[in-house]
Image (tube, rainbow, N blue to C red; front, side, top):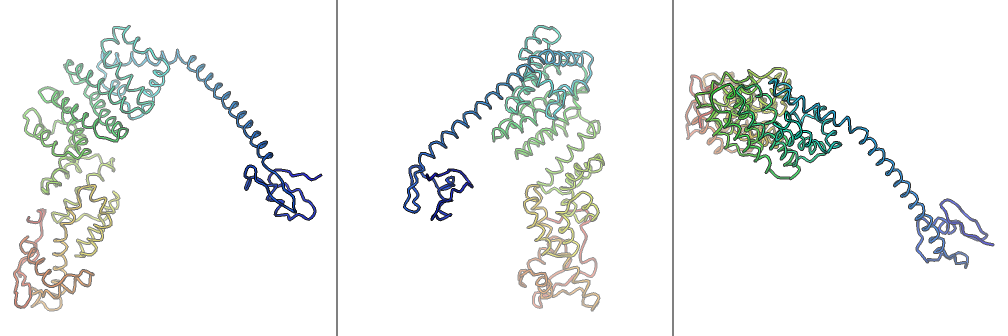
Length: 491
């Protein structure tokens, strides 16, 4: 009797049968259609029945596997429930411990302890463990209301707990909303306290408001929460602007507002805050903490860069660099990203070791182009790092360095001519400048060169005049290429 064994890799050989046909019949994983027949040596083998049997076996196997998976899941759920039940006492202890520490921090005016109890986004292990406890023990609000010591801070604590729970499960929108309510309640208490002992705790809350708002906006793919955070911080700023030790917190709030405004691209809103700080008689800038002064000078320096007020930008960014903690290399690099373009704009070139130490390689070719008078290298550097310079907002500042590069090129030509023929060194033919530019693969004709040199003379980068008939630039014999000496190119 002839048989057809259905399975991969199993061959059932018959006389006068082609092995390749036998393989097609017996390895039905690849080419079986229900009800389709294969012919071999005038024999028709029906495979539809075999398929039905195999399908039924697979269905039963899947059902059995699903049942086993369900049993495993039930077992895990039972273990989780048992764990939750067993840890209920531990969860209760953690919540009570937090509430006691919060009340102790306030009653003892312990600012360091209080700020640790309010820190959230830094993934504080104690706060995360508290959030786990809150997710197990669902009746924490009752604990707060039943105790008079806790209840007086109920508005703060209830919303803090909601914020902790939402943050733990990744619900940043809910976490931000709850934390903002807690911060509002905290501000009300802060106003009633005579001294500034809780200033550090307030700083933590304002920082968390900004960070949570950014996370919430990422979740929402919008900027609504960050704008709300800016409005909230402005309200806090109004609370701190006044006499007394609390006013020292105004600069920290200002710096947080700067970060929000720069993030949103609404830097024009910084002006009103700056006026309040710099014109208010109650403030002595040197009284503020060094950390806040450095941050303030960094952001106001950036604003001056955008306004192309390079002397003021140089003063502010240099102050930030001088007083920045030398161990905070990342902060120093952030300052140098703006200070270097400012220094280049006023004719001061940084050393190579500075660029190397703080990994500011994007400026290396820009600096080399200025030293060599190499216009091609400058344009190549701007093109290579265009995205980075545009994001930083310094692209246009660096682009304007072309005039200094032209000045350096003319000075090199002048030096070479002076070595060859000192008597005619002060006469530069425009054709020679064109040749130098063509050697740099810059296709610029005589008329364009004449315009460029005219601009250099107008900007006081070159002292001289044109002899139009002979197409010659006649340079001054005394200091034909004035140095900027820390001053920007004349606009």
